[in-house]
Amino acid sequence: MSFTAIIHYLAVSLSIMVLIRWRLMAFAQKHQFWTLWFRLSLHEPYLLSSWSAASLLATTEAAYGLAQHPVLQGSYNRPLVFLLIGAMHVFVLDFVYRSLQNGRYLRLRWKAWTGQSRTGISPNMAQYVGTPEDWKIMAKNGLNLDSHPADHFSGGYSSLIAQDPTDLLKARADTGIPILTGQTARPRLQSGVYQPAASGAPVSLLWGENLGFQRRCSRGIISVPVHLSRTSPMIRCGLPGEAICLAFGILSRNKGLEPRALICNLKQKNSFRQWEEAGIWPHPAKTLRSFYYSEFEKAFSLLGDSYITAATELALLFADLDGSLIGEWLDRGFEHQDLDFNNLSYVHGASQQDLNRLYREHYAVMLISLSLSATHSAIRPELLVFDAVCRLDDVPVPKWATSDVMEARRQAELEAYGPMILRLISAII
Image (cartoon, rainbow, N blue to C red):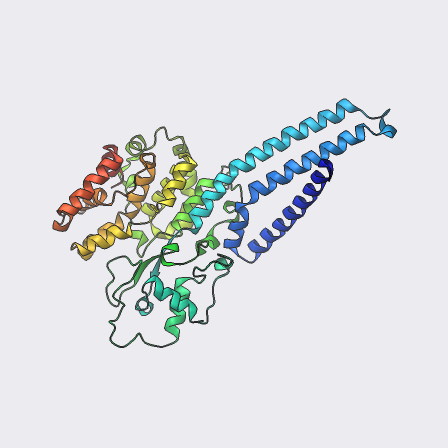
């Protein structure tokens, strides 16, 4: 087969694939199959770039063939035709470059929307929360589930659990079958549960691939405006909206049980300048603060001013940081409160008030770790910020937080982030 025929077949095949993908994307969006929609969008830059390149080669070959045709020899304006072909090359190459650049954002968007989720579990269902093996047993029992469309097409033929944990727990509770005789009100081992987990109270569960569940798009996507879910999102005033879409993905997964209690005192203390200079600097995206704040205010007005401020600063950091740093930060799971440290604190004697302070500092720690993501730290600064929250509440640092283990952790955080972290903590707490 000649090279010309290969190019023609390739161009036709890719055109058909682009058409099929376009129809699938429209179908997925119409029926709210958001996990499928996000998966398909991951391949968009490479598919469209390949199709553009193949179509350009086929068009160029056809134009060159026409130029050699004896019937058109006299009337064929070669300079004009080749000028048009050259312009097409420039246009297509620019399109391919922008598509491949946009691919970095689409990969970050996938991570931001499909990472681990923190979900509140009601007391009547919390007794069934257990280990990853318990989740597998519940999933295999064939319980009658009515899942949300956003959960569909989450993993193809993956052996991981396709159902949502809340759906599994609800179906388990609806059976009316009590837990085995001899067990306590809750299983002794509850993987992914944040402390305190008092009997008769809701629990906060961190779930995802860590508990054997497939990656899927957060259901919070249904509340995101259409103009922000596009491949190249824009906010209403015409500014790029990629950073806001990433922030929405994070915030839909990590709120916890009392989002109104989360601390972010930048606006109350008017300490934005100190925050900017101690973190990433220069910080040109700060000029967008009012535009971003307006977007988040519409979505989170019921959660209070501190929450909206935290959401705004998260998006501003995303707007200025390199994509590789954001990707590394997401891979480490730093958008979530450190579950291991939460449980370690509980084991070392942290009271319910102390654990509540560790939760309240959650967004401040998240923003600080992102602002200093260039340090490539492997731990979140949970303990350093906890000290500041104790000062804010005018209480002494508890005894458990001064043990040798905790002092080693405190020193490790300070060494990982450097002295500038103290200025950031002072600004936000």
